[in-house]
Image (cartoon, rainbow, N blue to C red; front, side, top):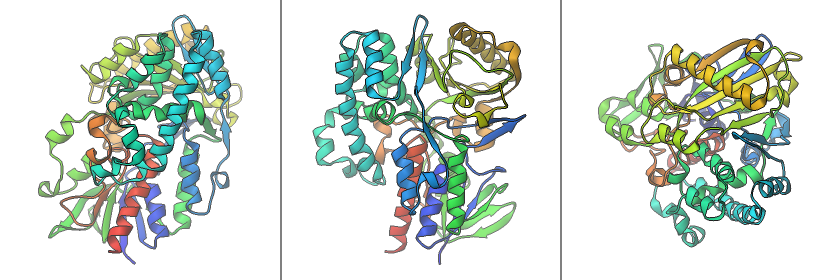
Length: 486
């Protein structure tokens, strides 16, 4: 039985661990932090529960397929609730509510722009077709060759790889609020809508067509489920165990060093930050130079606040987007000329509205996120400055006073992403899915310089996000199984 050591315990690592254990490998996971989950960790304080990282449950079919591969289902581990409404978007002069069905969403679009409902249904039908092709065909390929993208379906849609989401949306919709609403989902892919191929409209189907869900107890319930499944399959998980070096002898990986001790292995798989993982190798064994990494386009970093309120809040939903400032300007300040945003958009999540277990009685759990450029200066003074900015706007837009009801707040930003996750430049979501960073153009799952060295996660294929990370774990495990059995 070949021994595989996996560095990191995020979604992609746990996914790979399960598939590899099922295939008969002896799998050992080494996580630097005290708990598993990578960026999907949990904070519990004074009766409040926060998901530190991912907070949106989209593409429920991907999670179901993962557990089905082990003759399980999500319901064996956690209960899902479909959010109704899915979320609210606050503008300066209006609030758009995204319902839990296409009929409700079309009604809301029609309220904003007469005639837009028909265009929306056509747009989402096209997005659904793209979703089927992307999820069932393209993303299940390991990014080894450009030919993976050449299929009958993609050839018929080749123009969608050279047009952008922004162009596609603006061709049919003129109202700026609806444009922002339709461009929002691709932000999960980590790039400006004007830089993201229109084929990625499949994210709009994930949003409007499949809906937004909440696992009772929070997103960390998925990590707990995956850990339980992994251990049931025989995976050994070690926390507080940072990898200090990846050992290579004559071009073949032989294991890792943890706490100064060698852990021997036949195969090493890293689900940690790809750039960091390569720094654990001698320079001659690294595939990509510092110049390569520096020139890539990264998804944003984030300034996050975890806030406990001593009362229930009004006029909000579980998920809330505050687009009451200039969408384009904030995007430019993330991607074009990176600076701290002058007037930031932000996101606010209150899971206790849906799930009473996540806050004490008559209290509210609040998670606030400001997307920012990676690698910015990060100080406590800046964090406080931006907390004050968004809380002033939050009070104004939701028409309530909340600052005096804050029991505590904790923050997480660029420095923490670097310290906690070894994240390159402190990015939060990995490498953006632009045209030149798609599929085979992303860093590879298999090392070109070290035999039996593999990578998984959001810097490789298929890209950023929780469902893609689950798929990345499957792709790399399939590749390892195939190469081992040659």
